[in-house]
Image (cartoon, rainbow, N blue to C red; front, side, top):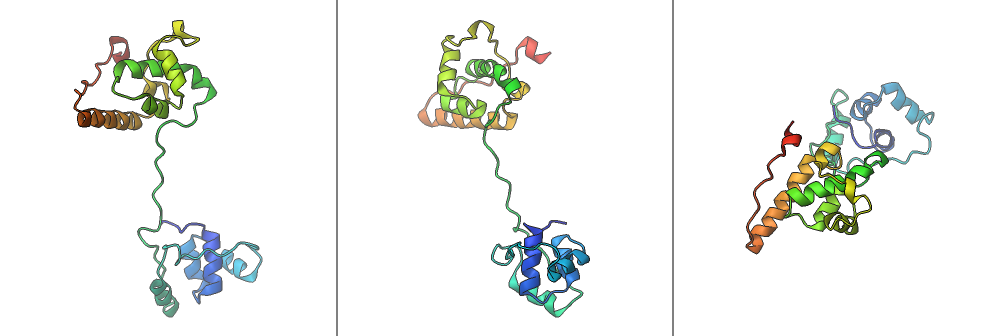
Length: 192
């Protein structure tokens, strides 16, 4: 069962503002009825400010009134009460162990996805335009050791994010009237 956001604070609000039974509040908040009773007695959750589930679109006032009239009824969380998790776009933090792999991933993207802009590569890889430019013109401090490797395999970005960026770049090229490059063919060593 899905629980409301901040269950203890929601329980505090329901205890203070409604005539619901401890069992009804416990079922709604995913708690034990004795814990709800301890909150009501002031033994638990001291100092927690109540969280209004009505104002935060987790339950309707009509639903609360319906359950107050019938002690056997249970509150139902609204279907849209839980916000969808925000999808992070691209790499934000690269672990220290993988930072040396980043130039390899950049070289792979420059070779296989020429339609991607530096900003898109930077967003995917969590790097700067300056680093991308140094890899491109081979003036990177470690240029002799850079070999293009798939950043998805290296764990620097997800395949979903990479596909999304490539699609955006292809749509941009199509709008500008340029030819969209074909998808890259895997190298023999990458396919193995």
